[in-house]
Length: 264
Image 1 (cartoon, rainbow, N blue to C red):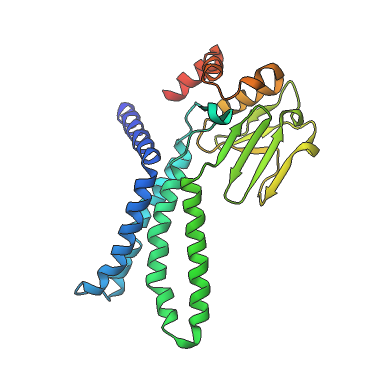
Image 2 (cartoon, one colour):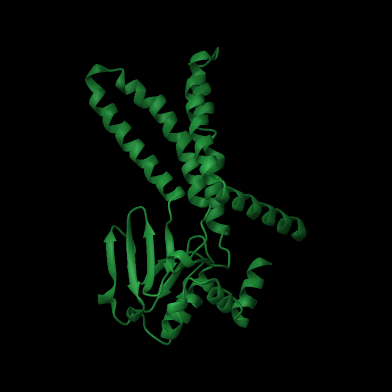
């Protein structure tokens, strides 16, 4: 039984990896399919029935949204990605945002082609339909920006950067306390110990304080250990971004042991 669960989980992680690699193809396919599903009721015999419209409009979104929640929970690989051209270590791109954007594509097109269109048919409510259309389109654009853009945590020689669609956070290494600079709070977040919070720079909107760093798409303990490593050794910071330095960090015995345990 445990072997079957393990095999199923590994298969799921492989599928999630494919989603990340093919996210542009998936986004284009979802967009074209959503448009086709909104055209289909016009030619189907029972296309104007509410049940049919719900089936072709909402049901396709449900599995993607459920898989997005699953991916956010289980996809936390114990690795970082070297970016020599940017002198940075990035967290891997996560599939959760891609799946959420795909599900939202079907849902938003259903609303635009159904309820919003019905409101627009009333000449006295055209303005409400226009507002709803702009809000829904903006929401969908934000989801796809999160899916296709480079967001998340990045380690650089100057400090820690975090970006999402709503804003950004930058913490210079000098802002962190030593010797204990970071620890995993849970699977989703890393707690940072700040000695100089006044050095932290924030832009846009963030629902959490600078002492909490999201660990989406990466193992929280590995990220905390990497932050601890470079916060406590200033001489190593200039090598951040190189493949050789990433190999050295991942070869540290307790890092290797943790990565091996995370894969099993």
